[in-house]
Amino acid sequence: MPKLPLPAASDAPGAEPEKTSRASNPSQVMSLSKMLAILECFSRNDRALSVMQIAERTGLPRPTVHRIVSSMRAIGFIEQDRDRERYRMGLKIFELGNVVLANMEVQREAQENIAALVRGTGLGVHLGVFDGFEIVMVDQQAVQEGKQNHVITLESASVHCSATGKASLAFQPQRIIDRVLAQGLPAYTRHTLTSAEALLAQLEQVRVRGYAVDHGESEEWRHCVAAPIRNAAGRVFAAISLTGSKDIIDAGAEADFANLVRRNADDISRKLGYVPE
Picture 1 (cartoon, rainbow, N blue to C red):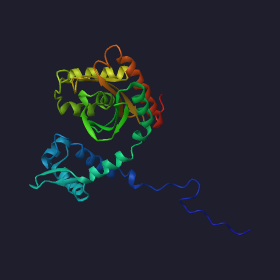
Picture 2 (picture 1 turned 60 degrees about the horizontal axis):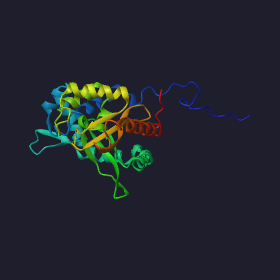
Picture 3 (picture 1 turned 60 degrees about the vertical axis):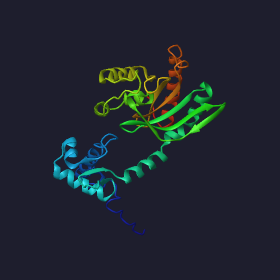
Picture 4 (picture 1 turned 135 degrees about the vertical axis):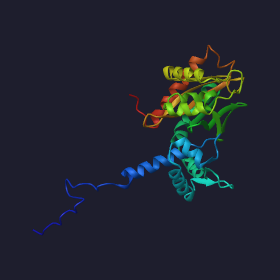
C-alpha cells in the first residue's frame, strides 16, 4: 500500500494549538482596555479634553495617555483641536457608529411588533438604543390622520426623564449608572426626577416590575410606558415604549399598556436570540 502523508503537526490528533494568538495576548488586551477607557472619557458634555484631564479620569500616567492618544489620532479615532491642547472623538468613530446602526438586528426584528402595537393601540411607539449616556431613538411610528406614519430619525433623549431611557438604564452596571448621575439630572418639566435618590429608587422599581414610566417628565402632556430589550447574551441594550397623552395612558390604563409593551419587548428579545433562564 502506498504510504499516506503524515498530517502536519498542527493537524495531528492531540496537537498543541498555537501558543498565543494575537487576540489573546494580554498586553494587547490591556492596550485595548486603555483605549476604551480613554474613549469613555468623552461625552456630549465633555466633547474636548486635554491629556491631563484624560489622565485624571482614567488614572493612567500622562505619558501613557499621550502615547495612546497619538496612536488613536493616527487612525482617526481621536482628533486634535486647533489649539493642539485638547482632543475630541474623531470622525472614524462616527462612521463606525453609523455602520453599527445600519446593521442592528433590533430594527429589523422589531418592525412587526412596532406595527402591531401602533395598530392595536393607536398610540405612538418608540424604539430606543442606549448609547452609554443617552437613549437614541432609532425608530418611531404613530397613527396620523388615520394612516400609520413611519419615521426614522436619530434623536436622542435623556435617560433620566424618558421611559425608554429608564427601562435601559435600570439594568446597566453600577458604573454606568454612576456615570449618568455624574452628568447631572436637568429638569425639563416640573415632574422631572432631578435627585439621584429619586432616580435610583425608580430604577429599582423598574427592575422589580419589568417596565418604566414617564409621567410628563420630558413633556408635560406626554405619558409613556417602556420595557427593556435584551440581546442574545441577555444584556439590556434597548427598549420599546408606548407614548400617548396623559388622558389616555392614565393610572387606570397604565398597567394594561405596560403588560402589552412587556410582551412585545420579550418577543423582540427572543427574536434576537435571548433565551430566558
